[in-house]
Image 1 (cartoon, rainbow, N blue to C red):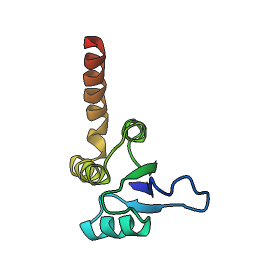
Image 2 (cartoon, rainbow, N blue to C red):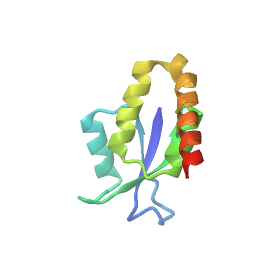
Image 3 (cartoon, helix red, strand yellow):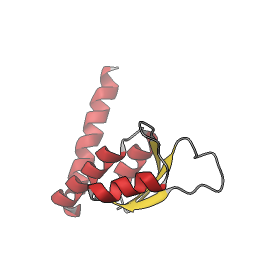
Image 4 (cartoon, rainbow, N blue to C red):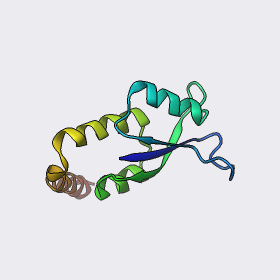
Length: 104
């Protein structure tokens, strides 16, 4: 699964492309990507492209302010459960969201 990250400080510049990273990534690969996109210490990055992710997760991750470390952990969990179990998890998440929407 691929993810493209951009430093929020530079994302408005048209010549700035960010970095694309294979997930799950090692700690060193994450650090290298953060340095490559020039995320300052204490700064934040934005996920812009999520290729190869299950569709229902890619849609949700693109809408939210997901932390790159959390997305990396999620990618590792997806690899552990296997692609054949993804539809089951999609159903669970849909149910949870429906229930939360019903309570508001």
